Image 1 (cartoon, one colour):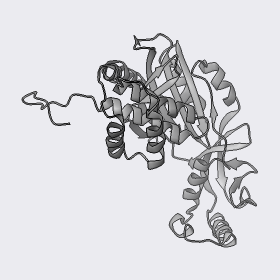
Image 2 (cartoon, helix red, strand yellow; image 1 turned 60 degrees about the vertical axis):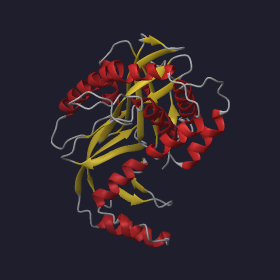
Image 3 (cartoon, one colour; image 1 turned 90 degrees about the vertical axis):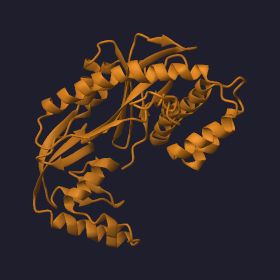
Image 4 (cartoon, helix red, strand yellow; image 1 turned 30 degrees about the vertical axis):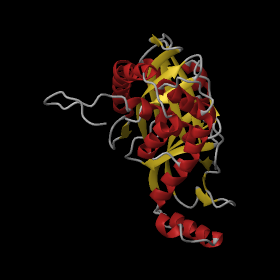
Length: 325
């Protein structure tokens, strides 16, 4: 079951976002053919509740569903027979299920694995700074939270804030340094992300304690590393924007469709064009796309961060001379 992208404004307080998760809960369950069934559309259902794509994949793994073989099967009836066979053989496996409003399952894991509620993750990030403002987006079980301090650090033709961007589901997360420009509402994500899965056997309190410290460390990176690099891009004129963007897009492995959209919009920039102008063109496109396509929007925001990071000085650790870019 695919959910439409839901996006809040960055000005939202954490309380506004958490209101949607008042009925979020974790329940123990034994999987068997009494509570797991294949729906009319071929999707798996647990106790009459639909599953997000991520939860659906987690359940398939628990049931031992043969993904590599099933991808080659075109007959829907045969696929359903395979799923029913896996359900019949699951032998009352003990699992934990995370659901919202008793209508949608967002996570399912074996009983020994930690399963962290969205509400707990959001509260932990907000607890780092009482003045934090967040933007929250979700698309079919994949969640994005960006958190920035309400006090701006630097004015670079606009008011910019530092913070974190975290892509997560109930089993793990991907956290990056983040810069947000208040007036233009552009977000830029560092491509250097910290990825982590919630370790087996850890209590929720231990997982959230670690997440809180990682959030603090990432904000410091945003403030002391990512922001100073971004500021320098305003001083760098780009003589050939098309070649500049195309070369970096190749290293970033940006899909051709996204590259074409960017190049089509470059002509709107007025000379002299700086790297800062190009970055903000790209991140603005990403921010506008997020409500319709979360993954594509994040890709463009991260490409902006990749361009910014390309201005990091690379020096030999021994002689301190500049290395070739």
